[in-house]
Image (cartoon, rainbow, N blue to C red; front, side, top):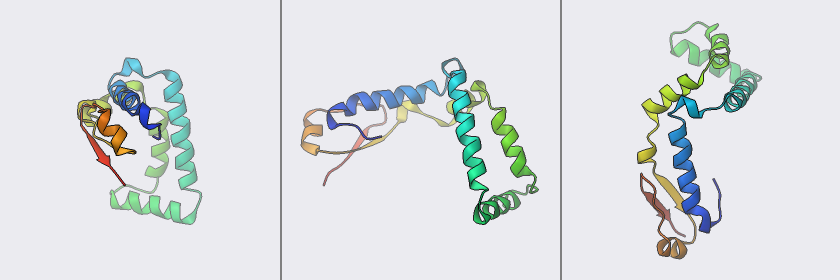
Length: 126
């Protein structure tokens, strides 16, 4: 995410808020689910449009011990993902309270205007 340096604090808070929202199925709207499904299905289709992409998917299935048809099952699974599924994964893997962030920008301004996020902030200066 690119924001003006003066908006870093608000942007960090927004990111942590969105990460928290992923852990609560009631906060995930049907519009968001529809958009996410559409984007993921388009990404899957595009990834299989080339010989290299299809080959990679077939190798991945083979290495996972799955038959080639498992690639098609991925489409079905994506079509049936629910907000509860997203929230379950969010609760297991997303830790908003430990969300580290890297802030790149004018270190003089950042040092004089501390940004607070749960996971801490790393500053990269040039």
